[in-house]
Length: 77
Image (cartoon, rainbow, N blue to C red; front, side):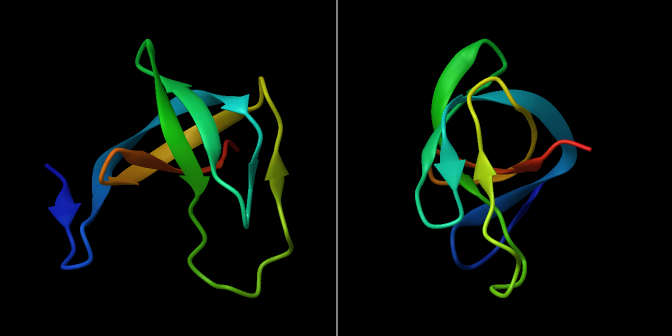
């Protein structure tokens, strides 16, 4: 199961792999392909002082949760 915070953010109990379709930056959402569908996506950062990141099209990402219909993603390891 997943956990829904009072902010409307749902973190997935089991993160899954997706891929970037439209570039995603720390300050700009993009799009990701996840489970055969395309979704708005934004970079999930737990601390605001991280080095700025840009995820490029085709790059694999880990989908860790969602906020409404927007996927929360981090670079795949």
